[in-house]
Amino acid sequence: MLNPVFRRLRNEARRIAEKLPEPDFYIDFADEVEASHDFFGADPVVLRLRAYVRETVGNDFGHGIDHCEKVALDAGALAGIEGATAGIKGRALLDLIRLAQVAGLLHDIRRRSRNHAREGALFAEKLLRGYPLDCRDVESICTAIYNHEAFGEHRPCTSIKDRIVSASLYDSDKFRWGPDNFTTTVWDMVEGMNLSFAAFKNHYPDGMAYIEKIKTTFRTRAGKNYGPQFIELGLYIGSALLAYIEKEFTA
Image (cartoon, rainbow, N blue to C red; front, side):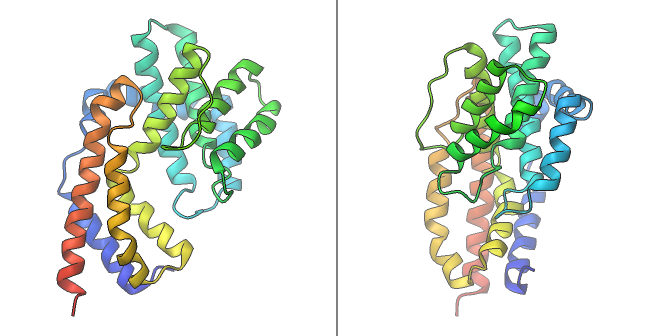
């Protein structure tokens, strides 16, 4: 359970976030976001995998099922946007959304491993053999999982499908470094790591600097256009929260 100091900070971060506007991505691409939500709640492959992930993944340092489902939903929307821009239509576009959502659900399945992107890709490859996906689709999903770390090693994308699924997963995951980071993820990580307030405050500047670096790494067209706003909103919350900490917790 989160200790009283961190609960107070989480509540303050959420209070700050409530005053901020919704990211423009969800307004400008409302139709694509809704389509991804509808698909997420109806596709048999995605529904089966969601049930598996819900049974398997715990909170896991702030990267549990809620995080995975948010990533899957936005990855599906981004894949739909990128696919349509590339001229992909009909069933082929739905297939692309499915692959992005599957990658989103599984991208942190090995979060506790030292190289969780690589280990996650290996795990997904074995798991998905039992799903009605062809081997090329599984390869696209696993490549995306392997490539979802910001500054890690990457596999080459050998097809437009690989590129879209990989880039969509990456950008959706990095959208979470915006407001979600300060309203949810940080506090789940603090709780999972049993971090002291002194250690939290000491790591704060490095954490903010890392988030700033994410701003220029987005990969899809929509991500490059809208991702920096997510990061700026997150940094605003982080800066305001730091000012609150310095005011309320400095002797």
